[in-house]
Length: 54
Image 1: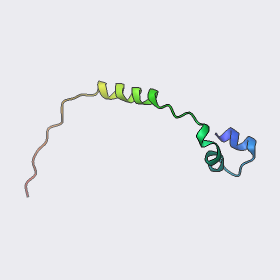
Image 2: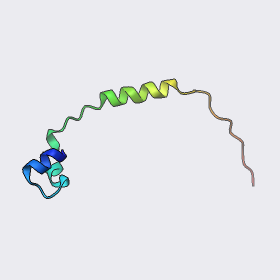
Image 3: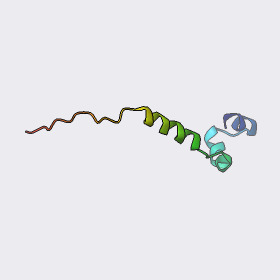
Image 4: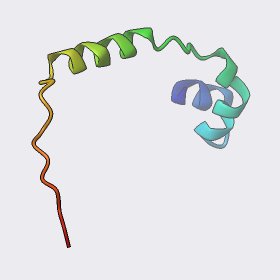
C-alpha cells in the first residue's frame, strides 16, 4: 500500500488505506491453517494447577 500511496501523492499511507482498503485481499485461510497446524503440534497435556488458599 505504501507504493500506491507514494504514486498517488497522498499525504500518508493512512489516507491511501482509507480510500483503497476495500480492494485489499482479505482471505486469511492460509494464516488460519498455519496457526491450526501450530496448535496441533503443541502438547495437549494441561499444566499442573495448585490451589492457592489464603
